Amino acid sequence: MNLVAPNLVAPITRQYTPPYDVEAFRRDFPILATPVHGRAFLDSAASAQKPVQVIDAVRRCYEAEYANIHRGVYELSALATRNFEAARETVRGFINAAHSSEIIFVRGGTEGVNLVAASYGAKFVGEGDEIIVTYLEHHSNIVPWQLLAERVGAKLRVVPIDDRGDLIMEEYEKLLNPRTKMVAVTHASNALGTIPPVKQIIDMAHAHGAHVLVDGAQGAAHLKVDVQAMDCDFYVFSGHKVYGPSGMGALYGKKALLEVMPPWQGGGDMIESVTFEKTTYAPLPNKFEAGTPHISGASGMAAAIDYVTKIGLDNIAAHETALLAEATARVKEIPGVRIFGEARHKAAILSFLIDGTHPHDVGTIFDHEGVAVRAGHHCAQPVMDRFEIPGTVRASFALYNTMSDVDALIDAIGKVKEIFN
Ligand code: PMP
Image (tube, rainbow, N blue to C red; front, top):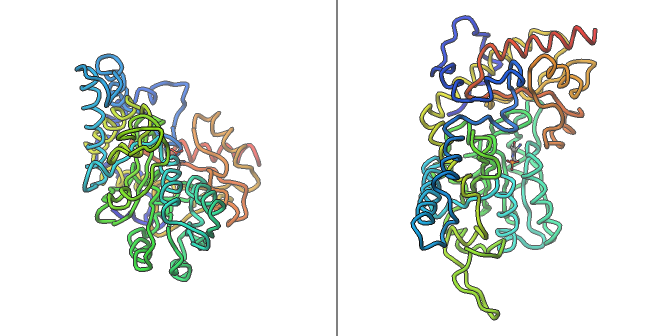
């Protein structure tokens, strides 16, 4: 689903009816009922809160279904293995991969990108080759490529953005050439909210023989993902941003690529046979999963995926877009507040600065007002450099946020202005 540009939508507080019963789903999140956490949690882009269904799945794993996987001959281990593999199948369905063997469990988006940079890089990227990233990327989709480029003598090329935060596609086109091996692009920017035209980016890269990794850390919880329709070669996301556990995530890769890529870590579970002379590797996905994985994390992430699927990603996106539209329109009415990121298609992220203040001071005052936001460069320093600012204040909306949270945000901005004036 493409989200509507929020700046084109009028404030809608009074007549708004959410596409699902937000208050009922809020009650699934125990932490939201705890007063110490304040009035409004607006930092789900950093990490989302967890519904009781996820907490219960993790608890059930440890209480009744826990043993190491893929090894034991006893029933409890077989049960744990079945659950782990069922979670893989849940992830496959969530992003519509063709085979569950294309789903590699990793610690999160960061590890997924590092895996691809290390393994794909070892196989396909050499001296003089080029890797394209964009100005929108999180550090975790820049630094692994930089490390690879330094190691093999490849070059990093960067797609610029315009003042609204949209990628300049003409410049992207110019960067593509026969030396381009990889294009690494975000599905949604965590700093500005921009949703780039990933399908077009992928098609253009493929036309030049390059592969594409999509960083779905901010995409998977808010946009319906279909890796086959998108035709990306790799997709990564983190469980904790999809209301699941931290330390757990998934990498999707096309089978034909994963099969020819070398392992990136050695250890138990990723081998077929080991001698001191030669080791042969396990088939996919185990080849890329050395060691004991995050067993309870897989159950928790699968429960989280079931949870958002039950509400419907389209419903969640529609609700978040309504909150963003309302917040954007109301913030724009406040003199001396500057919004960063007004891309044509946006995820529910509102980055702004209040004249004469530093984002960290704003964040602290917001905290006293019971409003949790992120303040700083959001691990996206190049975006901040592009706008020549040290950072922003970032409010991000999730499935459990309400129009009252928008009110709290607006009140908190009012408080900052009161203090600084
Ligand atoms: N990419 C983007 C766009 C992100 O927002 C984040 C997390 N802030 C990451 C990658 C990294 O995710 P993680 O820290 O879960 O590995």
